[in-house]
Length: 599
Image (cartoon, rainbow, N blue to C red; front, side, top):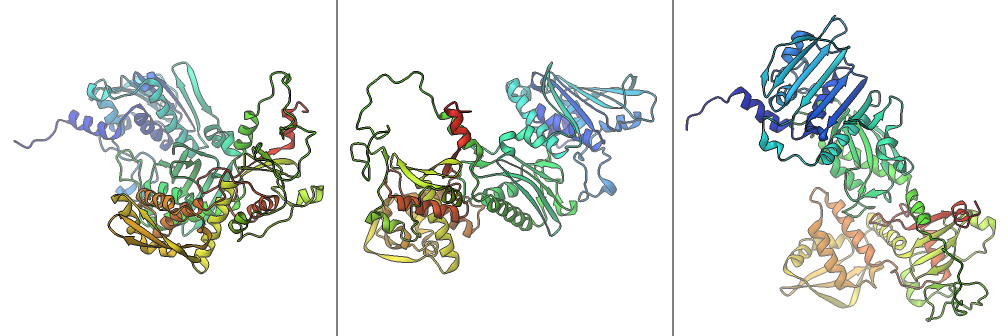
């Protein structure tokens, strides 16, 4: 087969396939051109999600007639000073966007500089370029893209529904609007305005929501030539996907693997693998230290010192989370208030005199087995839980005076509901604590301290535990046997399909070892390969802590409840468990009074 040069139109169509994947891709390239042109106002109009029309108007410095002709030629650009690919300070720079778009659509560009008496218009249709003609237009540039992909029908059929394509465009423009708060942005879908961002408005609140603003921690760090600033959510304010994460490098929206992995590591102790924080982070770095020319659509970057960037990001986020160690999402309390239901009509059925939920009943100690759902415990510690909480200082149950209530942020334990939730009275609120989630965090933090200080204390089992495992799970456990030693866990191979547990962390004596080993095997198989060894060990440590926490369904005494509350107040990150679930909900008196019509 003979080798030959490709036709210029085909070359442009191939380039379009790399750069212009969908309407949002074209809009991104064109809006970045407008930003580089010094625009302070950018208006975008689409129809049918951008399939039939994309129109972008800016008030930038515009183009002369000769610049307009060159702008639609491949690899013609004004944005690479001195031909230095490692000193790029603009957003668009490849010189491929306009000819690529023109190759697969009907493209019209109208532009005028402040020094010209008239504007000039140029039409490109399916890669065929016309001649510039005079036109009536103000200062700046307008680009109209009609019938996108009409020249490449095979790509046209892969476009999604208009609403889906519009959502991609909205996301792209939101990211650019966050990166450039000095520029006004608007988006119209036919005659409907999707958004309009003025110059001074709070775009973080507008794009990420007011709930994010009230559940965010500020980030600001400068180190070794890097500046990182922005806001991150408290762990209990999270989502099921990463669409709420906005990352920028030198004002460029990116979806970078190194940055995303660093975010996962920073939240490792606080979120399950399937939950994601919400954040907007801006990294400023010397352009010579980052390569933005590694992806056709400029969506990825490459750092010269990736380890430094990763380390700065992780430490900055962890420090910010530490500052908000005891904060819990405000949306949790709001959701709890909404969940409360007022009775639709007065109760007319007879009240069970044995029910503990009505006044007038005399209680003596713990609720009886006939009514275990709501208990006012006595003050005697059960022997079983004395051992479970042996490592924590037991707290007395003080009288609920204003002074004692002010002293304890999480209040004083008063009762237990469903043998799972602790009710506590605070100075200005009612606190509901999930005993399992709270104790899980306490055990985890204590084990981390032990490991860092002198190693986790071990205790030999009187009778070693034999655990049978499937082949893949067995391989996973055996691959980490030496790592388990650092966690206070001594495991040996036992035959061809089992392991023997000989020694365990002293805090985990009462764990269900068969279930725990099975869970550890699953955890190891799912570990993120980008995590360091210590980070992977922390993941495993979290699984160990979860298995020894006070379980739901365990009745606690008042001393045990108060010991838990006092330890929560003294323990970092106690507002959420290792999986990002809240450990407590605080309902302020004002909200409770609203429930009863007092406000």
